[in-house]
Image (cartoon, rainbow, N blue to C red; front, side, top):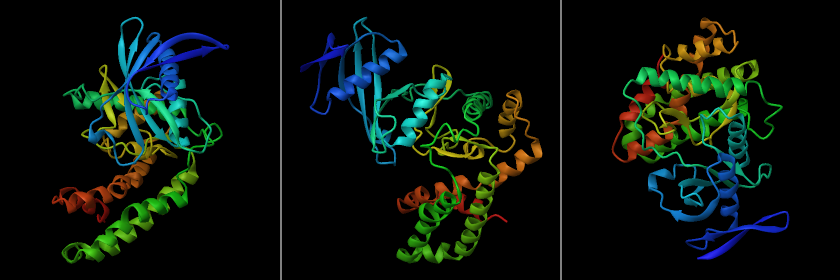
Length: 332
């Protein structure tokens, strides 16, 4: 244990405990104290390292750690610290400042450095199950996404650090993170190639069409917003129930992109009309025909970004997800 003095205007404001291993340096206490003040949860007394489950680490490779906090008023809490890039830090800071409450409170000391830096966030653990009334729940999620998207609609000038989902990006999505992996699997696995190599022409054609269509949506411009980019189905882990409300976590894949990509895996096309109704309530006059057409264009997005995870599952003995994604990509 060691002591850390909080400094304000050159004077020691208070002293807190540093408990745990050497990784818990002064920076984490400064971050935890700043976020505690932002959340108005009390005066920080001490923080302690806490365990994380292996499945909490995700696939991005970003460093994650959990810290437990003790406050002078006797309350306790916990935060997640993530070592991440400028786009995610910027998005989380923006969403926190907008105070919608659909994303974790967050804070960073280094909002504009291009280097990876620590972001500290409210710890949203999956301890509350999704309500059994899935339709009612999805309507709440549609409201949350409409808030986020319309708050940041066509915000390129306000978010200069957020990568754009332009033509280069869509070509990357359809090749390097999807079809390229499929082709490599065909080359190294004869049994796989015998079963699936015949789909490659269809996959390449779908990839080309999808990249062209999404580039056109990007250039159209009127649906561009902050997007999460990794919102899986209701069984996924990025929309959690927190205090009976949707909380959307893990914005590491966020882009300035057509908002449709946040809808197409979580909602069916019919369910997505709840989102369209929310747009109308916010003065976005998008007609149903145009919305349906663009939803369909974007509907192939999950099949591309989850093709590689499906290949990993195939190599572990399950082809269920791969078969489903190929059926989507090879439809006429």
